[in-house]
Image 1 (cartoon, helix red, strand yellow):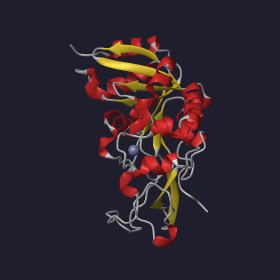
Image 2 (spheres, rainbow, N blue to C red):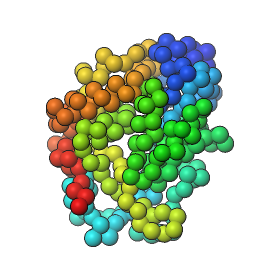
Image 3 (cartoon, rainbow, N blue to C red):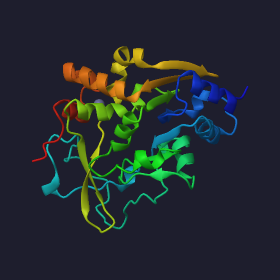
Amino acid sequence: MSVTRLELQQAIRTVGLNDRPVCVHASLRSFGQLEDGATTVIEAFLSEGCTLLVPTFTTSYRVVPPVHLRLARNGWNYELPATLPPTASRYYTPACRETTRDMGAIPAAILARTDCRRGNHPVCSFTAVGPLATTLIESQSALEVYAPLASLAAHGGYVALLGVDLTKMTLLHLAEKRAGRTLFRRWAYNPTGELQQIEVGSCSGGFKNLQPHLGPLAQVTTVGPSHWSAYPAQRTLDLTAEVIRAQPQITHCDDPQCIRCADAIAGGPILA
Ligand SMILES: [Zn+2]
């Protein structure tokens, strides 16, 4: 039996997301059968007065930086052969409509709407639709990658995990920054052909280790076979930053050789 828009709207109210800005990370597959797919989810949230915020990343705009720009402790093994094209022929603007394929069906469907607002970050843009879309998006910039999430938290927003776990919660990268880590730097060309340094997140594989701490903050429900958890953004940020300061290793993923986890936990890139 198909999950309907009315069931989605009921679930949105059950976990208290109605009339709020909500960053959604979702697996459409978790719903089993879903009437009209991603469009139904988007319409359900908008009908409940939400502003939807989603990551719409575009990793293909990254380029390999020249040797003199390569920062130490930056979660990047520069010795490995580089496969990124060192060319200025492609550059991102918020008018771009492409996104990396694995971002999922909901981000793709939001980007296809003429009323969406997209942030100005060449690799990790966020896109929003709904009453607070411009407010959330306008502060994103190359070196403030998570400004839309900070704005979401400041406006009483939530992060909703629809059939996915904490490893998908981008907000926790902002918590790493608030705990005192410098976020990694990458590079992309800007529209005038100059190489620009941009801020990006690290490895999120270890975020599942935060479940015992963050789980009690979540409102949960199920929609058909899909498990939903709704986290209040500000409290999640505050608690996560506190836990990371006390136990920095908690964010390490299962790969003991992970260079991104090692460098992030050590404090991130050395900028000077
Ligand atoms: Zn890792």
